Image (cartoon, rainbow over all chains, first blue to last red):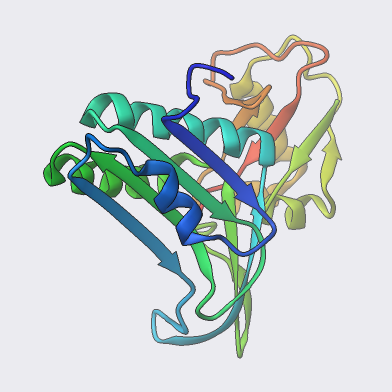
Length: 144
Length: 78
């Protein structure tokens, strides 16, 4: 048990993510607003057909960075609880890459906190996507 | 020193890590310069960061023996 117990739940997994796990974690009698974001693999990126994606992660640091984000969001937006789960490994079109669930007394904080977490995650958490297209593959954001 | 690589850095290094000697006691800035000199592929990236012991390192930090040093190319999670 640590300072995050009960309010912060972070995971990086090789296995399919479960929405219900995140949802149940953030439920709380004092909360009237729960916000869930689900990021999935889409079939088209910048006009190119995507066949699948590979996610690489620096596990230890990724977990630490995700925990920092969850904690910062909890304290900044006055959230009751934050659940942040991310996938790694090979993902197919339609697979879930990330789930963010947050809860708060009123809805505005939940919407704002959830959006902030996904925006920051994309900037700081050491996870990388390699996109496979019909005409080749490349690591996203890597080159100008 | 063995430096760990992820994402596109793994392809530039030709494996999950690379060997760069003489960097203990040097700054992260010097490490970045040495990397781009020894592995020109790193200079072609949008940018890259360095993590020391699982925390983003500033350019001024000094590499110590025993540090876990990792190249962090532009992230793209989510």
